[in-house]
Length: 178
Image 1 (cartoon, rainbow, N blue to C red):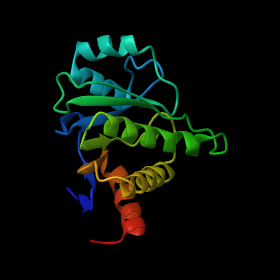
Image 2: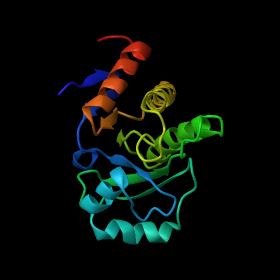
Image 3: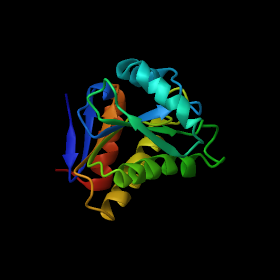
């Protein structure tokens, strides 16, 4: 398994539900009540208490983020964010995707969390092209980390080797080789 680590950013090929971090981010739908892909996997791994807490949150708007306990996950918290459905990139999708990362990081910081793991938000069934989504994720996170020392590590957890290859290639272009 290839992995990348530079500064406080790491890129791994793993199952996000197995990460032992302060928080993992759920690429949720607006209801926050579970769905397919990473959303369904997180809900299944966390157990039924997660959906019970999510019901109380009354949904979430695209680009925003809300936090819950992690329940049966190794991660102590789940930060739920709703990514944009990709149409053609000219309907505010980049700004909304940047907001997902920024608002998730701000929420984690507000709760005093020091480690967080992200999936490739919107790059699954929401259709965001992987390379564009990864570039937004990496650039937004790096810019945020430049303004704070509150985070020890930010993990980009790729479900597939091909997604990890995209993240690794972009990270090396953006941040340089080890």
